[in-house]
Length: 125
Image 1 (tube, helix red, strand yellow):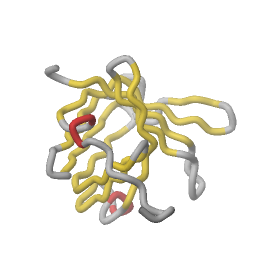
Image 2 (cartoon, one colour; image 1 turned 120 degrees about the horizontal axis):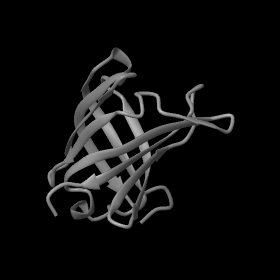
Image 3 (cartoon, one colour; image 1 turned 45 degrees about the vertical axis):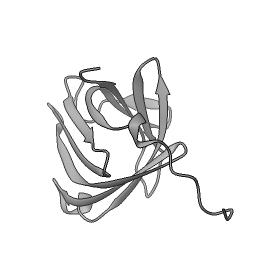
Image 4 (tube, helix red, strand yellow; image 1 turned 60 degrees about the vertical axis):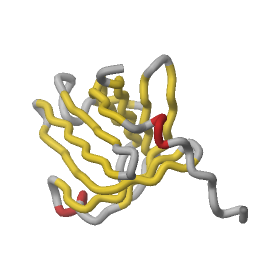
């Protein structure tokens, strides 16, 4: 394997439906809830590489669907459709952490956007 490729992680780790517990953004040391503290949502990963994510709250709504790739501790969401033009035909890389039965996805700050942390709990297991 060359130095630039990473092995595929086990899709069973992600596959299934996850319920949103929290979505926060951090910028200049300040943490906020961009979609509101009341945000609710769901993300679904299939074994064959499809995904759908929906999150809404008093601060707005985001949603997208497409495909995903899971390598080591990074998942890349490759969208086909999205709730806004910037969420369509895009690629979003997220660092993945599994802790205490939770799925924690983190996006580093980029292109003027803050760091984002999304915490999910698996549904039905």
